[in-house]
Length: 366
Image (cartoon, rainbow, N blue to C red; front, side):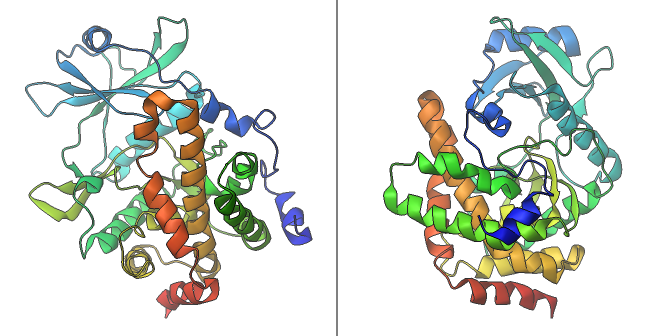
């Protein structure tokens, strides 16, 4: 580690590099078998606690167990949180959704439905004795962007949505907001033990070089940036478009990776999913960043880090998905849904001259 990065990291909690056995940030990643709940059990719990009758249809999910509840109306989503996730982390998501419902009702995101007794979270004892937190959310109509592909205006619309969501969350506070999750790319250096385990030598060497650059150029600068709670997972499976107008982004799902982190991290995460399939990897990012900047003006200190933060997200997607797919082969297809796009993005975007890419991003300010 370079001296400058080491000095900065001493001021950033949880930035040390250590192995999976010692580092608590890996706990949920490695010990997170989704709770075992059948459709019949879900329907019974739904009727008992919410007084809702409906048919439960299992949905693919990486850490939680999730059902679509079909009713005569729009329906619901019933989620059972992974028992390995601290209750405060689940409550962070719940309170953020309630906050958005009050502060930004125009944003199309799930609404939390109160149980009969007024609770928004209902503890449930699983057959294996573990406890899960059940939550009922409104079903948000729309087609996942991943199913239709990005159009000419998609990048700008994502930037506008991300900025409006970030603006709505600016004053949101929660005791668990600063929790440590490996999907928060400010912790990218802690991926090292997982990188070391990769059998692909050329990929491992490329990731080593980028992690070294991240430690040297990014970590020393994070503390001075704007920090707030952000969505942190605007991948194209979590963004909805109008089924009658696939070019129009209408909503956002899955607040499970929310965290307090530098604001520019949220921009980098959204940008990382625009690269795959784009003839020019930088062009859609510039459209997204430009739209974001029109709603929430970005700063030079943030934009000079954007290239490396995008690469950090691509690395994180590749490394975590490979690790989890190896641990949970029965769920590998879902876990790896973004892997190939991230690997392609890493190969194409990271190969561009970093200085030229950064100059293009900073040009947004002019």
